[in-house]
Image 1 (cartoon, rainbow, N blue to C red):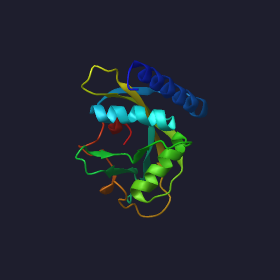
Image 2: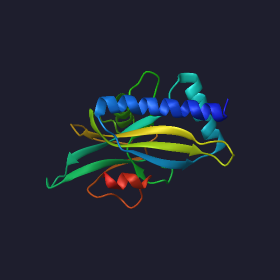
Image 3: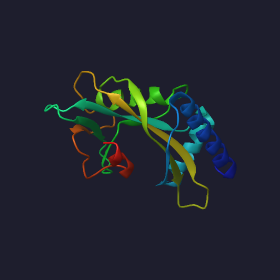
Image 4: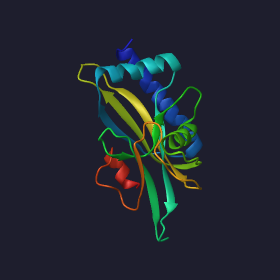
Length: 180
């Protein structure tokens, strides 16, 4: 089941999830972006929706005061796939909110436990393969989180973590530059 009906269902679920987030957070600006992927990746998104009833993910930008104390630093993660620095993020798990997903993603990638606050960005990534099928929408919400204590170290699929005062040249997605 990977046809037009699946795309319509994914769209309904995406907008339902974002509407729930708007009711919690208030007005959101949504960035729409095409995500070129293989047919297998697109099919896995649809299978995930079929098997666990969810699509989407979340991440967080963790901030701390710089050692000089003049402006905040932002923690970014390198996943080793050569696509640049990114926020720690993950896909939603069954029964999990976007907030919970972002907190879990930060801990899984960096070892830091954080509490997320406001939404920085919300995205709908349209997983589009080279076939003639419609793209599958995949919502992603980026939160802000404040650093408490502990040392950030790469964990799980993260190969590097680093604090940045300014955005690095190599970012996984350009919209991130606006909030780093």
